[in-house]
Image 1 (tube, helix red, strand yellow):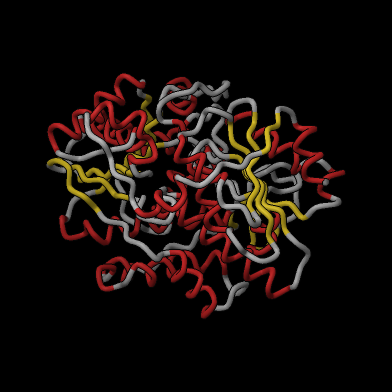
Image 2: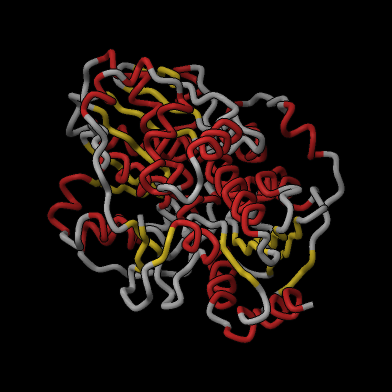
Length: 431
């Protein structure tokens, strides 16, 4: 299996090279040359497979023989060391909880998978040290920091927007030390992401460093997110209803992975990309005009993205055919006021404590079901509410206890390096 750049001006590369490079030389995201649907028999008997067995079947065509079967299964076993439960909320609506990993965010799976792939490639080839450069709007940084902590031959540099992530999120990416460094940027997530992209195109820098990215632009971070949708189908298959997924969407990697799962044959009726007021994709689906904007700060900060990188992959799946895209994808945006009301409703009426991102996913389902209600709806709960205490606790009027994963970092001392412009990032990396 080779991967090509979506800008179509760079050579095709192997899985290994796509993982190590992160971004193609022509600035394009990598995409697999083919997507081979899985056998019908696999779906007919999916309830008899373990999650690890499902994940292996889903990912193996993309990794091919670049990681031997035994080692790939071990990577999956180490990646999927926690649960992914479906929790019923109301009739025809459930949530898929993706926050039971070490940093209590859905990005744990992609970060752990990618870290172990890089660790394998480094060990096998004894290559030069890799520098993982990543921008975060909240949860990516903590998941990457945890996933890569102590991985030999890999240094991790995380850029995050100052005062625009929650206290718990900040502690998760600034307290680990070892091979993890946090750079606190005076700006927005888009500023952080712009610096990372500039670094990957800086010939002076890439001639001296072996740089890769752990954002969802990297195929090893992005593709494992397909697993979630298979795990949900396994748990809901016995309901014999068509499935509709509502995905809280920021950089659009998670929902793109869901659409990839559908391409592999997973029977999904429809997707909903639920966003906050950073409504670039909802606007595009209404007007046909894709117009990136500076991101606006909201209480669902992991979705504060003004130019979602992975949407170009979604367009590629549909061969830039807007009519096919709209048949399969709806997208709605919601304000902070609407989000708070949804969190209150979920707690008061259904005794469920959602984080702001999950609440937006719930709102997307409710809006879709106001016109189409003959299906089983699943919204993704992408982070534990403890990561957003300042938002959640005043709404539910309760104190949320710290789970073990959070207690391990919350009392540690923050260590970060403040920067404001790209030249400071470059100077840090070179030195």
